Image (cartoon, rainbow, N blue to C red; front, top):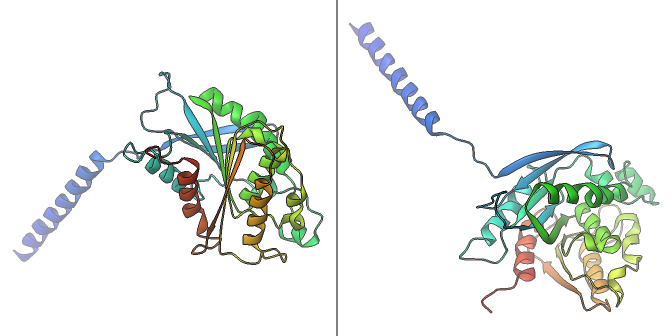
Length: 286
């Protein structure tokens, strides 16, 4: 009798558990943030993965077009998801700071290769043996990535780039060499120590009075101290960069410097991008 009761009890437990599992699984469905695209790059001689966030209400058949925010370090396990969260939050109707935007996360293959110029410094070469691919990566953005996104999605002319650390170095290089690729630059803790700060010694076109493309630049940095391979200080280099841009004779360039002393190199990105959105998109009620 005890064995019979035990078997009945076991059957009921198994049946109840199975019913629960079946019930739960029947209502489960994917949580979709956007799409994953793949782009075969001739410039880079490799296939690149793009994580694409499409704003709520996006419809390829309607006439609405959207700004595009490009995220370097845009892999799922890097900056893509939390930047999408900031964009989504700031575009809520009751906040209405950032317009509804498409976010393009460029997943990395070899970020150290792609985000650096060739260096003449032995310590740089030791840390990043594959260095020197930034020119090809910028060509990829200009000639392949942006045309692909513009052709496939409902985009307008507003383009933002976000980069931190080595990605901030690349964003700075684009600003200095191909400034019209983007109209908003969010540069966080840029690794300007690379090649002994050679990028800071350039005289880019954005400093000239003749530069007429409206460009807004946010430079943010935490309390980060000395860089690992040189005597450069992250806060100092970021400040020098902002000061350099501030010397522009163009009336079309704006620059904002933001020091975040409670953040370090590992934690600064999220807070800095939130601040950048607040600064680059002023309160419409004011």
